Length: 323
Length: 305
Image 1 (tube, rainbow over the protein chains, first blue to last red):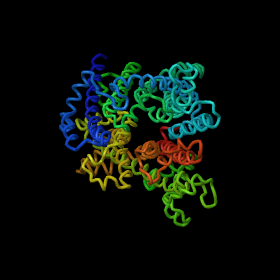
Image 2 (cartoon, each protein chain N blue to C red):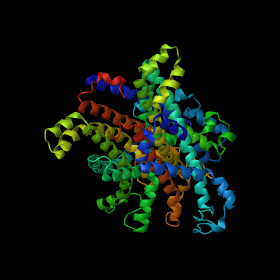
Image 3 (cartoon, each protein chain N blue to C red):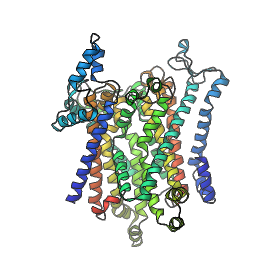
Image 4 (tube, each protein chain N blue to C red):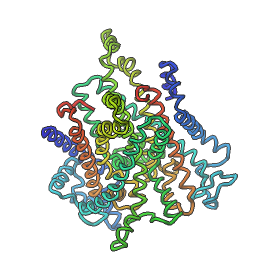
């Protein structure tokens, strides 16, 4: 197990390193460069000044050389200054991470609380009327464009009924946690409605698959009650693949709320990524993208480990060729 | 796609059609998609017959309610909403189908190569697949969409052409969207590679390309068709998100996504402008998903009982 863990850690670190180069190159391909921004801020600057500044900041050096200096600084915990927030990029990251954790945490808990029981319930009678209705609802949720769902919710609850704020966060020292909760409601609803469907369908599929196994038939044949078989024999085994999918989804959550956060002006990770890319904030864009990749990799790692831990039939060595 | 489905149905006897007939939602979705596609592809002709230019700005007729002239009213600069919806549908559906097909092609090629040749190539390609799956998708797409084509050495007059935003979005979605099909195809290839009919063909001296095309591909067609149908819906959703953010299809070329770009500001004054494009995206995507789901059940009777 330790060896498997180490292997996966090394692999993830390698992917992260490769991705840092890819992201660094991509950021370099975005329009303009830091000196262009200075030129637009200072009309008196000549092209000779610009060339001198580019040399000063090393922008005229080849890509790999620039990447190497960035990597060296980054390994020392130095990620440069954020242009938009006028402070070290790392300092801009933490508050965003906190806001996102609140939003995504609540929505994720709610999603699972709805999706898992409903998935098990739908699996009791596959293709029955309840299952079909739930299936249709799932597809509806999955197929809703998240930004449109946000607009509809704003239209109904903020503009029409006036019950909830259309976005933003309470001002500091504001009305306390009730106000905070009111601001969270629409973003949480958007995220939950959009993501519950796929988890539900996965839980249902896994449950149906498990109910077909011989040991379930045996348990039923020996006279165990349907309810007991469902909850004690089937559910525990059906949850194994679901845990994997949940862990896989967990890493993507932090950047996955990008649309929702942008629509509701919720100052989280997703909005920070979007704003830094659109605002030519190169240092911050690089840091946030890399951080999002790191979180996704951690999610994948947890998924693999969880799978290996929950299902003793998986041998760690054999995973190499597996799916 | 329809011819592929048809030939499969013929090959499978009437089992496929009978099983599909038990899925009224899937059939309804197919009809709806065909109808929408037909209307959207006829958009220029319809605009011509109606005598309405979907790009004509009329600042004296902004935010008009539905009328005999403008069935769904006009938008914030006086353009006919219905015509733009049809034309936007053309763009969104074309992008959806083209990017899904491109992803399927790339994925099939990679999956075939990995599954057929195996060994180091397989390990390398599958690590690459794992790597791409591990990436945060939406932020990556946003960066790719924001890349300055000029810096890649593409001439400015070409890079600024209107149609480029179309090709570009197809390309970047295909660049990250091939992984599902690649895994499916690889798995399917592994399961048929050592079957007797493939071994027999190899024994008779057939080359790898011939074996893949004639003996392996027909046997992995069903999962590819299902995955591609599902991915059309997914791609339309992604395109709409990118275009909504101003990074996908560039106006004045309409797409369902970029018609909603200003919707958030207009939500109080002209809510219908915010409703129609999103509704069409929703309907199209759910139809793709229901059709894919139905095809899966009909093509793979083992999966459903």
